[in-house]
Length: 307
Ligand SMILES: *Cc1c(COP(=O)(O)O)cnc(C)c1O
Image (cartoon, rainbow, N blue to C red):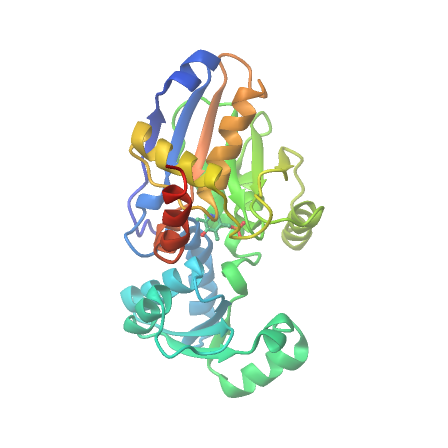
């Protein structure tokens, strides 16, 4: 498939912690792929768009919460490339749509709200069958855009790294991005995935599941589970101040749900001498900055409490 968006830069971060540890940090700025079709959600969508075209369907239907980066990106991509999108949104419809959903609707996405109980069963054949009857012309994409077609797009990230390195680090929600990167990464590189939710063993299982589906097995990856801050979208003051500080020293914005936890974890590992002097780590900035909008009030509250 042709290059639809520009190749994203690799930006070196310099600060006293990295200097003291003798570790080089290169940030793969996938947050700069496109202002709205963000980071890894584009990587995962890319080859799904090919499958969609082959399928002869006329719209893409997918799933997500009210703050979903995936829903936001899918809606934007639908508008740009000219296909219809349907978002199955977890929870009841609120009188006023939030930032994410009003943007999605502005891009032409049809929003279909699903109560939480049914949503939990969204991958069951009963629920899927009902949606397929209701939307017969739709190509079904799982939550987060995470399926086997998501992997080759993520693998391409690796081919764009044109400097020497030892590690590639990324955040993990479903693990599809990490599984794809592990496919793309040569055997002498180590892929570290930082889980952003609390579910022991879940990420390991997910990567194995994607590998089985793709029929490709590699063991160049490791899951790091202890930087979830209590669960998905759970944050605390320490994380929020870290994000503030990192923005000041590097100029790079992070979101508190994914990339904030990822970078926090990396700096903590550096402080524990996990990486050797002279090693170089590439960190994937997977985007998701639209999510800051929804988290801002809570983040501000943590910062106010500091003084
Ligand atoms: C969705 C998302 C992730 C998680 O990707 P998975 O493929 O589900 O592991 C990571 N970072 C950002 C910014 C995201 O929006």
